[in-house]
Length: 197
Image 1 (tube, rainbow, N blue to C red):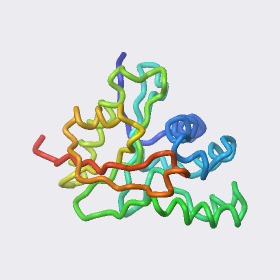
Image 2: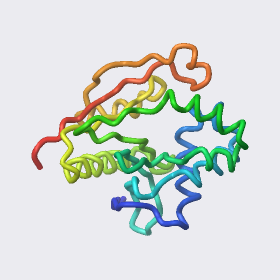
Image 3: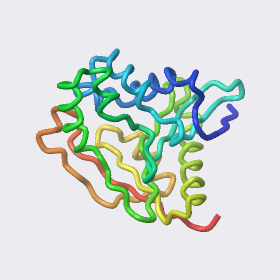
């Protein structure tokens, strides 16, 4: 399979990007952002193509995406108005408070990944590796010194990929009682140091 990586997804690919995002993260976010139709509706609005790298096959079909976050915005964006449009104001307020626990502070020189996911039928075919390599190039192009990401304890397959690609663990954060809401007990922060080309 030939995989090409490009910046951004097209407007007509927005629903597909949201569906792939929800497929990957609904186990983690479903209790907060569900039911499925509302989660899909919100992420169709909230995913920002300006902060995405997209993997496609030779026919142009989207195979996966990797998001990142900078001072200018993030891939899994959205604001209170977007939340309210889907969940109403009361639903928006409590969801925003709960989701704030998952936010990561940007640090100087750190290129923060904001999610990576591959379509089920394309897994195990090098798509995730291609997206991670593209993220590394993006970090280098932004003159960053390090790429950071978080991987949850219920996703050992992703952690294995990151380790194979040279990411090292920096520390672990427990979710405490929120594990019942997010369906994971801990997240490990991992880092890859940007070296010369």
